[in-house]
Picture (cartoon, rainbow, N blue to C red):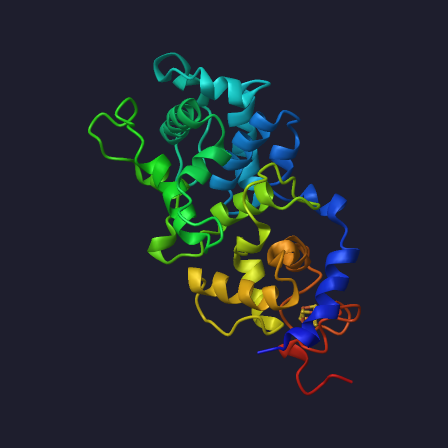
Amino acid sequence: MTSARTLREPLEHLYREFDYTTRVEFDAIRFPLRYVDPRDRELVALLAACLAYGRVDLFGRQLDVALAAMGPSPAAFVLGFDPRRDARAFEGFWYRFNRPRDLVAFCVAARDQLARYGTLEKVFLAGDPDPRGPIGPALERFARSFLETDLREVFPRGRLSRGYRHLFPLPSAGGPCKRLNLFLRWMVRRAPPDFGLWTAVEASRLLIPVDTHVENIARSIGLTRRKSRTWRMAEEITGRLAEVDPADPVKYDFALCHKRMSGDCRDRRDVVVCAPCGFKGVCRHWRGRRK
Ligand code: SF4
């Protein structure tokens, strides 16, 4: 594995010099960034993150359908949501595992959580057993608060749909929970591109949202040797990044992910594409060819 000393300079350089303004337009974060009111931004961030599987342009099209149906204030729409009256708003929504009914359930669960706690941050804090401890147990309870809401208004037999369950992965299942870790990154980090509305959660507790892009580049530059994308992989990569910046280990996530996603890294040795890359000295694809 690559040492923190060797990784520091290329990681910091990437983080400092990255063109966030351009790449934000290709990222799911662009949806919550459209909203100025913190209540709308928080709610839209959760919905966008929950749907952020597959390509941004594909789920983004469907998310636009849902957001258009929710009107200028999605938070106000959710707070006053009545499934009998409002469910038809989502009739045009259809994305892979998710159907209109899943969004209806999302609105009912979010409505009830917001009515009880006021903000999603307070929902999270209510289930945070140790504000200095690992983020996993708190994230588990946050996801469970949406899965264990009384949703018989939507699922009369008491059985949640597969699509609704897919919106809220549980850390205890062992997956990387990329979408919920992404939501936390947006909400907690207060430096670009994140908007950091939550002030009571420390950035040092965050875990990197591992998707296929982060997995590939993390393996290339020696942040992990693990073969499968799991919660343990997210912990391992974050642990390596914390050796470089313990207060804010996931600050590198956006730039690493978009470097790969944009084609600036092809996960193979390419003399043209790799030429400006600061990781050549540590990248496994350049092993034995450093000069
Ligand atoms: S050297 Fe090339 S393959 Fe390695 S991380 Fe950089 S761009 Fe990717």
